Image (cartoon, rainbow over all chains, first blue to last red; front, side, top):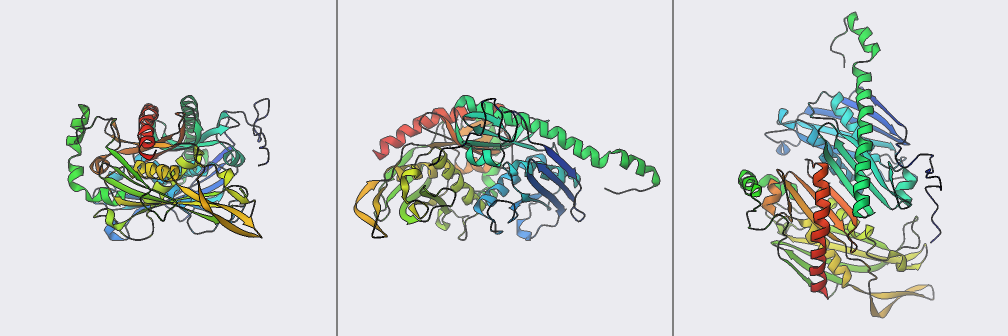
Length: 252
Length: 272
């Protein structure tokens, strides 16, 4: 095999100029799709992801109905042009697994008991992928759920960490994800301090595991602050305030 | 699979209260300690037509893993590495609630979590499984049949896959006159490590090792952590729509290192 290129230089700077504990540039916008009950768009490094929520709505097929709570469904899907080699648009095993863990990461935040016999459908469409797309997708989906007005216990914030050139680093980009030796996506409810998603691959000593886990949690808390800001911008921005006296009501 | 089981285990769900009360006294319905796994048996070489196989029972959970070695085309980004494919199927005979059909999302997650443990620990030396770079490599298929479902398919599958791989023998493939020829004599599949997963369930505030079907029906969340021979974590996966506190995650890592070591010894003992 050819010699692996170095992903961190002698000054501890990564290929994209970040330090070990720095996030990539992140942008979030809430309410980006007209038809959806809730929606959000996120850019997380080069990741470009649209999330949408429909519901609570009727359950189809009916036999899947849950008598005491809402049925949560999630679909994570990558556009064929989102990666270097065209991806077959049919759902891969990877996408099916990620859809499952995304659902399990979001559901704890939803007060599902308040919506018996309904379905809440979450869509995460990855338009461009750049490492850490599941955690960026969860972050956007959580905003879309809040935008849909569904009662939530907390937001869900995602961030990954991993091991690159033997070093624990925050928020892996595409190259670090592919060429590094470990990836640890984490999602949490920051206010409640509960972990809702944890996946690990790569080799971690007990010490590195804790270091990477705590670093990803810290990253998630930074993401949470940006999520709050994005929600504020939609619902409490200066523009909205100015509009309010004009008599426009019920707009969301 | 598991979800289907869970929805149907009405009685077990009702027993959750009783379970939580017992757990608060450090006891389980079947009398095990919280960090005690069920009896484990491993029978390797069960299928003569496979390159390697293992029938594993973990309490009443029973799975059969079979290894088949063939030649194939490498992925473009790893032209000099062999291929490893783990697939799991929950057979319709495995429980009253299992159904025939394409793999459910639970079965896909199961196979992928076990695959990650094998892959990330670098158990199989894929670099030594190249025949002609970019053209042909060894392909190792590991198919797992779930025979009887009673909780913790993750660990039963992980132990079956590891045992089957550890005892698998394959032909040596060589290129003779532009054709791939298989040798008569068999060589062992090149394996170096013994990754062992330990799955734990959280029920209320208690974390229990190796949950049974009825414990899974009552569990809030699940975590599987795979460790290698050095006691390093090589894969992990949280499951179920509930949460863990950060402290419980780290506690689960320590438990998986400790119990994993014990189980690794038992696996070694039964496949030697």
